[in-house]
Length: 165
Image (cartoon, rainbow, N blue to C red):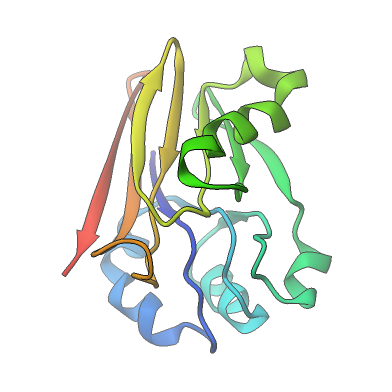
């Protein structure tokens, strides 16, 4: 199984150009996680037409998105449990916030997937993975746009950050 991981696209239109740039990744992936800040509903709509998408609302998303998408979700795929949330706060405190939002399910979760900071994160703490793909559409707080790939094969998980440009 291959999962394309996006966050913080910060689009002001349908995202057709951005998703065209990611066309090869979309075609190679079984599904997509998006951890919020599409910004506008047409961008969400465009992505979900191209690939099965599990998504949450972010702090910059319009009312149409926040009405449609939850703030957090748990997704079970290929024997792993993923916790998706946008995030909140500054870079150094986001992981604590993410963990606190899933306290009731903490023991069941294998991977926390989040966004908000635009800073890629890919590390393991004890037996939990923390993964933030960075921002695929914005470079306000980072020098390069990025997205993530999670691959599951033979009950093993591999993950990586891909940089654009």
